[in-house]
Image (tube, rainbow, N blue to C red):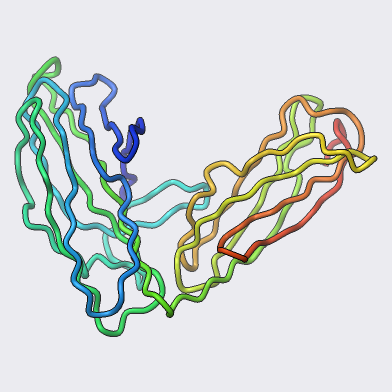
Length: 262
């Protein structure tokens, strides 16, 4: 398995990828392609790469399968799993160069099989390297890409299970809540939520958004840690709420006292 290197700074629908020495600097748009497509649909797409570096960049494009680790890290995998749509996607150009200041549009096509159902996903990955510039004696190479999510309308089953909501750490400096979730449905789920903290008098003290809780893949598990910094001393109750659909949510609560070990 290979962890994909994505150094990003968002600019609207595009993002900037660069190596630590800034020899490779590329703007890529879009970062995510999210579609709802019926079976037997053909869909043409384009991904734009702009070379913002001072040297010629050599690019190899491919379609890859991926997973998310429990902490949300994206990992490229060699063989597609049953949720991958890698075989649905073809690219026109596999190898190309981009001169400094130029842009290149990678064109591709998605063909949805007749028996498709649920939600599928893959990544359009770009291996980018340059042997010029400040590191002529050593080739600089990065790997990045655009994620593709495809939902098949009227076939999705959305089901999210809360495995646990616990206090992982409790000190006068910070309280860390740990939320473990598992996707039991057949499609990817977008997660949004927060931990709402109230004192012993039911007065709201703090509302902390769930960070890095964007997407959980089918059969996937995600652990989300939420940090309450500089907590107010005393008894508290933390209320968890996770939204994963138009009218679907999970709620749980846990009580504790700041400064006491769990």
